[in-house]
Length: 326
View 1 (cartoon, one colour):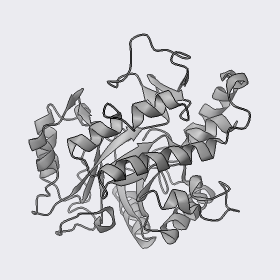
View 2 (view 1 turned 180 degrees about the vertical axis):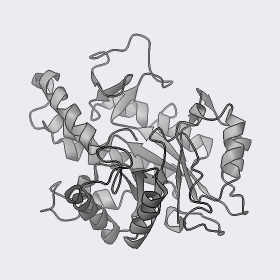
View 3 (view 1 turned 30 degrees about the vertical axis):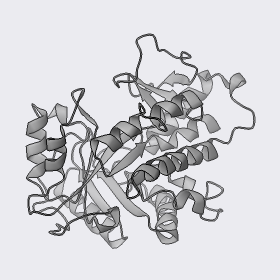
């Protein structure tokens, strides 16, 4: 959610100065390690819930076998995912409400289209813009490219935008798979704007978004089964998908798994604090201890998401591979 490419470049420069490269495996392929991580998450989740949607955000170069525009589609990776989330494709790359440079837009769209045309991959674009003309343009351009999109007027993703009304591509039908979705709402910090969990649930239930990307927790508390059921119903009577946010490229010190004595280097997978986001720590995502926190056992984060009744997972900080390539 947090990282856009410009911030990633800044972070890479500072990261490369201070990371401990002497104990990073010489033959490490950071892109392939992330592909393997996502593919194993997908396999685990779909073995439990065959219809479960897996949607990595950013790091879209992973769909190419070479990680650049010279490669063929990596079908092992593409077939393991159901969608790709892309931030700032048209607006918000260098600043909110500012158009993304054409060369960066073209670069990202190359890989998005590779994924879309090589398998059943739904593209979900989040543009950060607040003027109505740019929001209109964002929805129109993404729709013409065959993507569904959300124009976020708050970078914090903490509100339900009042514009447009009705929402773009409003849909009265039941949405039972990601392929059915015509729009989505990205709202992962509701405790910034809503006083209680129930206030948030009631507000979402009064909308007709086909898909909601949200967090597992509200102010540290999980949602009740009744609240989950209500969130899955659109105001027009149709059903919507609930997709749960999960960062796999960084550890967050406000999550349930964080221990009081954790710091950089302890456990070994904690590499460095992200200088742009206090409390977020880049991890050696290929290490088994970190992966076991994320998936593969009954106490893992992903199992909690599955047990709560979500329809999919939205994987963030996929582009963490950039930091280890330097």
